[in-house]
Length: 272
Image (cartoon, rainbow, N blue to C red; front, side, top):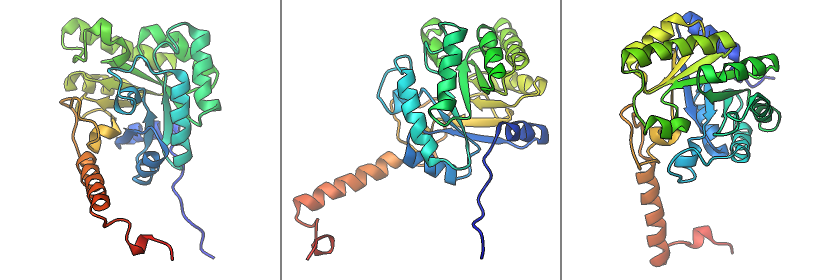
């Protein structure tokens, strides 16, 4: 009897192996069961349950109001839909900034309660001790530098980082700091592509770019940007591969019209 062949679960070691072999890592966000299943079926390596859900799912102006309980809720849904991809939970604002103990406790919730295999935290030197503590507790961490959305007020908006020599050097230093602290990967957001290439070449851990050019070890985008379900603003680094909003609008409008015209439901959709 033939046995069903399934893909093996993508792991932290696979991230590192792809970096070593020069193969690109693919990542997308997902926030619920149906889309998680689709992303996983497409063969994406890693799924980030991002706090970006505050904007693309909840309709908020930024990510700051998103809570730990909301992140756990959405990560649970994603976990139920995924068989192969590595699931990474995004640590929301004030879930780790209040101290190492809070950071460790909240990161552990993603693995213990929600089915994630790792967490992501924004920051460089300021989170190094958190990363060390999590590594000792077997909680893998992806660090995140460059444009860090939880620092939007300090940065004065969503602006490209590392454009001056001083800020570029700082980002290079922070990349090495988080690697030395034990991060298994580093997300680089909205930085010049040559700077991202430099950081990528200097690190032994993989870099994942979002608005950081083609020479990172992998790429991640927000799912709703990729499939055309978010239109409030479209960053320069986004490439749309579909327009599901337009398709959904056509379908729902047709449904409305058929009800009003007495076409739906027909005998085919009725019981006898």
